[in-house]
Image (cartoon, rainbow, N blue to C red; front, side):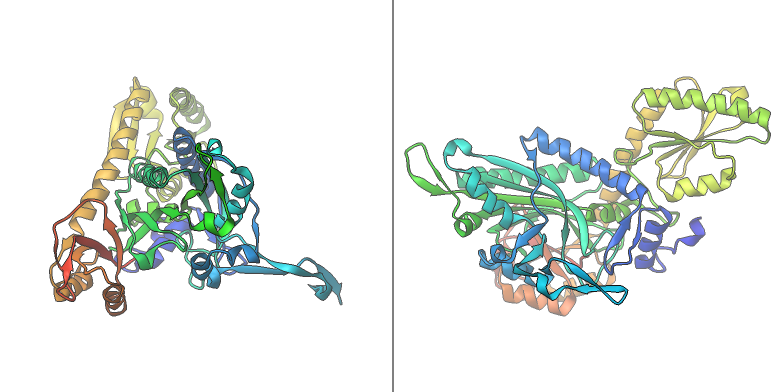
Length: 488
């Protein structure tokens, strides 16, 4: 199976698509730019969803659901917002079809009085709803999250990383004060950082976006930025301080304890199935997918090896006992007892699908009371005693999780540079790539020049304070170095 996967150094883009295909995560759909998420991919997203949903609820958030369709007039109410999404919107103009000559066509008499927009994001319809929910300071804060799909009419698409329809979560909160809203924005940024690093084993940099890179309608956009193996950055999650922009647009006010009427303060935050793309490109290798144990749909696979029915019965009984022991410990384990596939095929398949740990057992292992353990990440194999295998596997899964994070962190550090001059920046970007820290004068003109000349963008202004200096391009004063990279 591994020979079907293009080597990373040969064609990284094709390698990525090959890994997605061989791991049976997703495939292209009949609709251009959209994808079919296969069971393996959906199981991975469900584990991500479960982890994040638990973290959201621990921080006091509740789930709700809002309509897929948004009246066109709603998007006109917040000028920056509509400008940011206008070119990506799918528009519904009619409500029905009619049969014509054995086919169908749009019924011209079914034109809508007002066109509907297929949800690109939900700020507008949610804030129209919040106007009905909020009258008093007692109604605040509102801490709502929604798991949904959205549509953005992308021209260039790639499975998981950028598709016209994708799955995501979007949090939308309302607060009585600016301080509460800012605190919420930063709290959810930290939730995303924690999830990325502790569940995905993907190290990230936290920071704030430049004005030109902000979410449409936000006052500040915070982000987590990850570095992929090819030296390109991936924006993995964003948390937005929306100020009072949407409260003004939809006239959402509350009466405070003194009886005064005030505008509400807002945030929104989200991550999507793009995280799966980030996970693939952070850990996987030329043999296929590599998954961190915390998110792997199957953490351990047991592969029995036998030649005849007598051996089969003995080995499967042995395998069943291991399966039951691991399952009782809460480990997501699978016993691959398919008779119509040879062990070599099973090994290659489980390697390509990224199962963190494989246990192989044959007649000799049964006799000796052993098992063969094989790690997916390092490919290291060892023979271990059957006795105490459950605790050993538990500990090994923790080790694999930690090792994947440390390996990714080390690679990021090796691919991170600091430069002082524009010429040095261009040389490092071309020859090494990766994250580059450099001083910037804070102007949109310089930012645009860098982008046009090098295709690199300012990924974020790190939240950690740095030393002041001079812009690498203009020589003007700079408060601190910013993070730049080419990006997905």
